[in-house]
Image (cartoon, protein in one colour):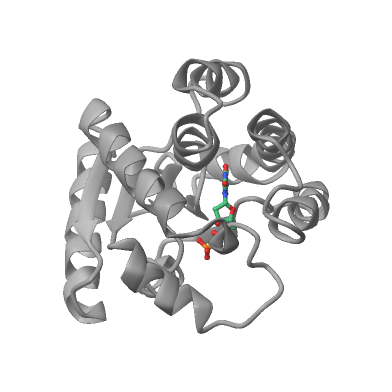
Length: 214
Ligand code: TYD
């Protein structure tokens, strides 16, 4: 794979504690070993302004924001992140890997949070437009397993975990619905399997998609 090729945009999605971060780290190492330049980023956040907005979203009481305010804050952060980090990296021909992207707003605020999928889709059209990921890996795990993993982190950023297991189950079903409606872009991976097995599915899916795109 040479650097003259076009950029390639990968997003990872899934419920809390699905193991995205270890898969993302491995994938970045793997792609860099093949000579790719990789920009690793995350949402909410990924740019200075978006990281400032992130603090408003992931800390504090579960009912701090309603679904609409939450979605607009997510999209304020995403607009900045896209303009300042994602689009420039893709224009340089890099591979961008984002820990979460617009499907999270559709799942967490649009479907599970009650905002409605139509409103979430309109925000996505407005802000993301044609800049959807080339491939989205949805790491699927039962909420009980995910929350046990996420709870082990013991950090202050637990506002979404604190919304409870019913909410997380709705999020899980929402991601499966998004995957079935966007079958050419999304790949669902069983993330309750061990790390090696999950990674071999991730690697295979990404390599196929890159080969097809470049
Ligand atoms: P993240 O840092 O990815 O947490 P985790 O490691 O638990 O996946 O994201 C923080 C939380 O923000 C996560 O619980 C999901 C939520 N979120 C939304 O509700 N909507 C969004 O659009 C995004 C990007 C994240």
